[in-house]
Amino acid sequence: MMGTEAAVDRIRAWGEARDWRGYDPYDALSSPLAPLLTLGTDIGRRVLTQAVKSAPVNLRPALGIRPEWNAKAVALVASAYARLSVAREDDDARRRATLLLEQLIDGSTATIGLGWGYPFDVQTRFFGYRRGTPNAITTSFAAHALLDAHELIGTSAAWLDGALRACFFLRRSLLFEDGERSYFRYVPDERELVHNANVLACSVLARTTSFVGRSDLDQIARRALTSSLRAQSPDGSWPYSESRGWVDNFHTGYVLESLAACERLEPSIRSQVEHGFDFWERTLFLPDGTPKYYADKVFPVDAHNFAQAIETWLAAASWRPRAVELAERCARALVGQMLTRDGHVAFQRRRLWANTVPFVRWTTAPAFRALARLELETQRRGV
Image 1 (cartoon, rainbow, N blue to C red):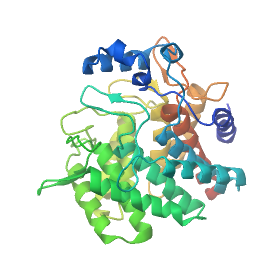
Image 2: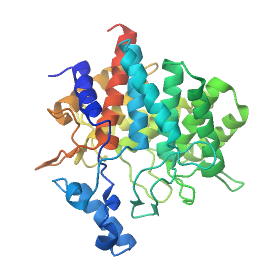
Image 3: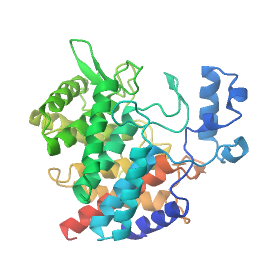
Image 4: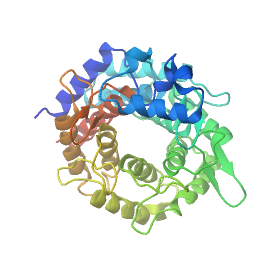
């Protein structure tokens, strides 16, 4: 089976040949035909989005949808390059990380601070928002890419300054407070407490302030963190949000990785994080390391779950004894099951067929970033 380094090289060659532009599972509303096909209705936008996402063949060219840069994908790839620049002493990776981060900062869509969104309209069953609307998920991954560069490359004050400006955006535009509690919203006008979005934003503040020492931001993150810590279920899981009770693999991974990054703010959370890891490991994986989508449902086998699982295990490497071993097992499963011959990472496997449409934000960039982190961790351990 192909090793991690060879897989990273294959993915890197595929992405660089396309300048890391690509399609997205949720980009159907970018089609110039979307207003006609959806009749301008929310339900029509949902149906079109899901139909294009789930189709076993790529409908996008026929719909006039073009591969685009996506801020989250750019951030993930920049993080991967920053990691490879250290793991391999790779000057080209360092140069590419720098260029992508400059592009990321220049492309911010926030009016205050730095914030990032998706290059397509989004319509879910719960809410919708316009292309470019900054959201907590994209902004958090972009800020972490800047912090990765600050920590691993460290050649420009702009990286830490950019992460701090992202904190200002999160505080000014996404922080909700009602006197009794506070949390970071997914998008500015949405009031639902989505736990992975909240704790991701908290992790940005926690990690940034570990470098700049802003006690005011620490306090904000600590209060917002409490809102999600209280929502942990007795079995150790976290529901997706206050009103949506499903538990899936990669959102759980986001929560656990982010909480691990927040332990400096609240050391007492370790027991809750451990309880969450125990649930995640016990319930959301097959014996060979393949991530299940839900606790009671294996399919679809989704590449995003593999990539986030590797990241989440490695976030616990310093205190969970088998974490690196489990990350390596998941990486082998990712490479063996999802990496295509041409170098992109397939989207999903179902019982009878596979969707191999090349998505950058959802599959290929997260896998590139996760495998680069595993390579860096392995190199540091001298394995």
